[in-house]
Length: 191
Image 1 (tube, helix red, strand yellow):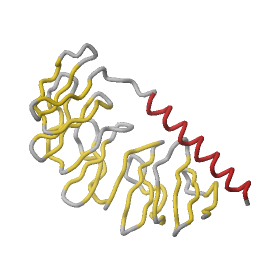
Image 2 (tube, one colour):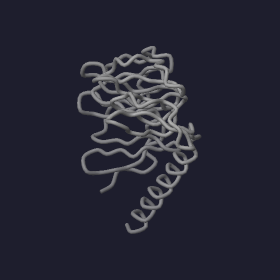
Image 3 (cartoon, rainbow, N blue to C red):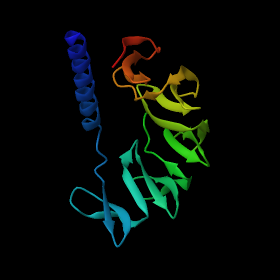
């Protein structure tokens, strides 16, 4: 029994370390968010303001664009500050694997880097794409979709995390396990 818990712990640590390495290896845009006079803008590595503070919210650049808030809507700018996807979303997220999660009304969907809706808003909750799959929630159950919006792993979990290096941590009741991208358990749920 102790061996099982130890193995579970080792797998969890390895996945965590790999995830951190993946995030820190993302190429920096060289632009950094600042706040001045209650508005957000961007500076370069020398501290020079390159995008004048004008936004009500701002995030770091990802896939060549940054998520910004104007009034109560979210949209995207390019590295010179030009709006490339008009602020129209209730909430939104940075791009991951070429897609960004957006909320319209009470449902989540996904847009591509041109602003085109590629997966219609239909999910109660949705997360970023990792390893080609995104966690979504439908009727109090979590599952995973691919980049076309097709359900890759049917909603069946009480809780779920995003994929990292081919595995995702999922729960049914109080028991947690790991599944692969086919939805097959590689570590059966345990307490």
